[in-house]
Length: 164
Length: 124
Image (tube, rainbow over all chains, first blue to last red; front, side, top):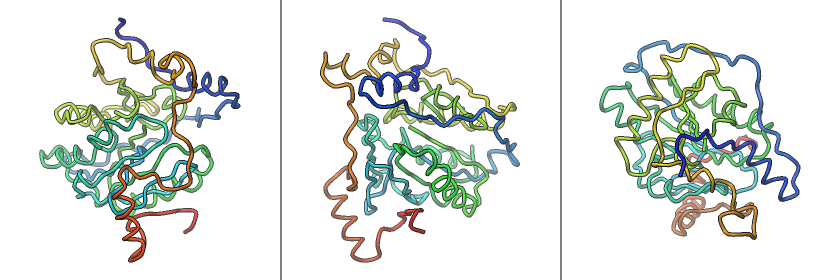
């Protein structure tokens, strides 16, 4: 039994796993320049908050994600009941996400904080995709710009990104 | 929000909070609303208090009394005592529904208005 160990190095473990399977190493997204930085323009209590999650969340009535470089996304209405949310993904243990989607898609948590006036409101929509996409290029050139366009149209002040 | 420090450090987003939980719990533990709320409040306050681009702030929550879960992550052969090195699911091109009735609901919608709120950006 050991406490306070360093974070799991998923890049290193993926490298080891791929090597043991005879796959070439995975090319992780890597950015060394200083990232662009936008300061908050108003207090959180006056801000509209958007949400984008990569945990494979869809809503009952929508088509689920498939597991081969699926770069589609789902528009999830900000007011959707949690009981309508589902989770599907090939690469993480879905047990808890299926019991309580808030663990990977904290929409109800944000709604609670709006009720408590910690934020002004949740955006009209949240967005979900299935993050097991092997082509970083497709994410960068197709999926990410499409999502950025959506949240801009929703006029949110902040977007919380929740990868899995 | 992140539970994979090395991946987030490599991507280098403007700001991040790091939660040292197993993957699949980036925003907290199932049905623990007070914890989920505290994690989100910490996340939101980092928007304001992080001033240096590229900062990853580690949150102080612990998954369990000890960190033994870290031994089992992505090491299926150690877990099962040999055999497979890959415990991920297969890659299918068909939608992978959580529940069979989800498939029926989606197919019923498709015959009417298509899929509500489904966007395939390559096809746009």
